[in-house]
Length: 476
Image (cartoon, rainbow, N blue to C red; front, side, top):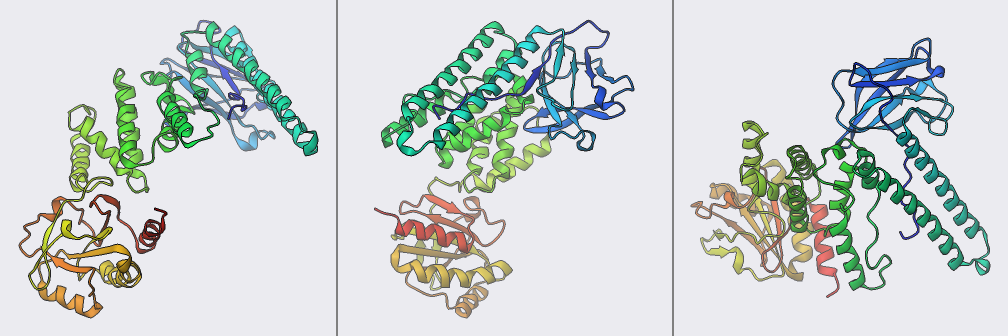
């Protein structure tokens, strides 16, 4: 990490060339593309969208022209694959407040031979990108030469010193460029693309050092980005940085992720567009995730922003939909203590969820007539109960229908008996179990620890087996 170059950007940045009657006047000069179509595409929230297209004239020119300016951000000039022989078919431009400039394109080397007309700042940034490319080649060559030497001739200290010199050269170049264009979108964009520098322990040797370095990275991850600057949403890198932060720089437990996501949204509140985009992104990310516990993120956001009336852009259909889902899930989140249930067995004797004393408890809610339950229940008994009952597992098999005979017949048919297999139901519906557990589809599975905290849910037999095997075999 210490000796990686700080970034390699092959970008062209836009500044005004001359006044026109249009707010947007992007002239493309490309003699090798006469009669060919090229596209102007925008980045938005991690995706690429076509914004406009043009055909290069017989004179080798074309203009992207419109009255209304594009939102400031990063854009892409794209050339169709069958139009050129080069593997490079696109290059990025950065649209700032002024959107009048021209670019001369040579398809034999889009990046290396590109020319900018009438914009000193663009030329400086293009030179910067080429400087980075040169330093990257020097770095690669240094490492290659080092690895080619016999081990006894390798001078590690020397090559590390050389790599450090390269890094410092790049850093000085970046600092000078940032100083020269301070307050400009170009400088903000460039700074935002740079990774956060390492903290006090870039190469941690102990667990304590690792944790301190991890906390530093978590706290400073967005130091280079103004989260209230909406232009970052129209870049290729920022939306993915948001996901990278949650997946790699926050503790993996669901509550930590939920709190970090809410804090991230809070930092965007100064700009209405940034607030809306960040909240929508994190809600959509967590709702669509297949990773258990990610739903804690969107439920935390519902509590912190939806329930407080801050989501003013959402229509009533969306609000009802998300609130309905919230009501089903908010009482059975990963990490929270499961709600106690007072139930009855076949003999009418009381069975309390909290009174069961094994190390782990599996709450299994099912219907005897449910096709999936008919398939899964015997497998649960044979592959899970018989394997783990004597190791410290209680299974609470709760029938959620009111037909006692159907339930009793199902138990008898599948021979569902055992000291730690508890056949129960709620004949009077007094526990209101549906308010605390999601029973919209059955079977529904919740795995609880010895304190009755929910540690897993909605599992199939295979993954349940893996989790239990890991729990019962982990070192003390």
